Amino acid sequence: MVPIIRTCSAFVALLFALPAAAQSADLTDYVRARAADAAGAADVAAQGYARALAVAPDDPVLALRAYRQALMVGDVPLATRAAAVMEKAGVAPPDVAIFEMTVALSAGDAPRAADAVKRLKGTPFEFLMPILTAWLAQARGLDGVAVLDRLETGALGRRYAATQRALMLIAQGKNDSAASEATATLASESDADARIDLAIVRGRDGGRSLLDGGGPELEAVARQLAAPRPATIGYGLSRLFATLAGDLTGERLSTLTILFSRCALILDPVDTRSRILLARGLSAAGAQALALQALDSVPRNSPFARRAASVRVAILRDLGHVDAALADAKALAEDRGATSQDVERYAAFLNAAGHYDAAARVYGDALRRGEDANPDLHLDRGVALARARRWSQALPELRKAVDLAPNRPDALRTLGAGLIAHGGDSAEALRLLERARRVAPDDAAVADALGWAYLQQGDVARAVPLLEAATQGDPAGTAANEHLGDAYWRLGRQFEARYAWRAAAIHAAPADADRIARKLSQGLTSAT
Image: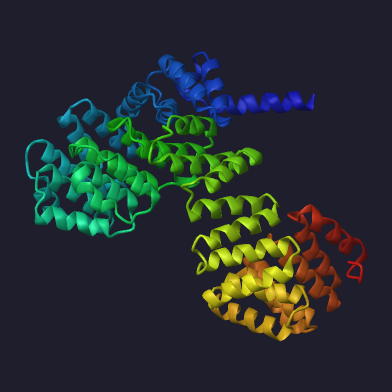
């Protein structure tokens, strides 16, 4: 009976959450769409919302859900219809203006695009208005560069204006000193995508110099450069939106990542980089199946195929498909065109999966690829060797990491804590940990390691404040709470010790849970 009551309660809650218009209509499509939405089945959800919106065409709440799902699956007509409902109700979110401007441009309707740009005033996207206004002016035959230079872009706008300004100069045929200066400046930056964007519009003869020395991906782009591509408003803004999508990639910003990458694809449907960004946004939004479909459309001979494969590995890992992720990561790492990043990523996956010996071997491969001066790799290899119970081999790697980065707190902490755990020079260990504490006074892991080292040396009075600070900085930390409990017990504060051990037990791994359980039942003994 209880499960039935819970099910009914859930349905009633869902009913009250329904848009008002939908409550008087057939609820089946809406309920199914919500269920599909929650399950990450964006394509099914979009179809359901489309049918529900047909029944309740003026409901802005339903329209918002339809709009978001339509952007995920690429249903531009549905997104356009839903956007119109929200605009009519006066509740459209600011990004709707970006979408509507994009659709208008793709249809060749410049006046409607200009109207959409005006609606960005006073929104979080106002910083884009100078760039969009300049491109619209250029599309009308005016000097877009002059318009852009006259408008105040602000600090945030300047982050995106440089590449757009260079594209406008090239569109004007000004491959003179002004355009050369702009492209040379960008070519010297670390933003590989900006270099690619400019190389494509300069073509085989003028673009290769922008890609020199940029690594395997830029070399692959250089090999495929053809005739110069026209630097149109569509190309320029597709690259602007793709850059924004890349900057906004992340779980909390997945809605905007999807919006900007989808707008980039509306303006440039065959752009592989935008499709990869869309896949990242879809995955962050929980639509991993759609994300994998997007990646499957990336041609194997694309210069960005390795980029797509790397994103695929991350998605498979997040889905819990560890074996498939490891297999794909291994293929990337062992491929003839593998980079040190590919090798390091594979090693990290092996480490996370508990294959410590294999991870140490692969980290060694990365170091032999000319990365011997990389403290990250030495630290990671040392950690993998230590977890594989090969401390004598781990020690020189950890020392090398500290030598290369003498003020890096995680390297200092790992080496110091390792020396304590394996019976090394305790005086050296304390010096390392005390230095880490000075460098990173608010680092909970460092406070825990130093407090634990003091405790191992019998200096309980110095240990307790550090361990208390560690648990305050990381209240759910298993190690810090267990260590604090041990310190309290040695001071005779048994009630507080058990309280700390209970906190440690909440998120304890199976290997630690049994030991903590024995402490709770027996107290701190030689056996526990």
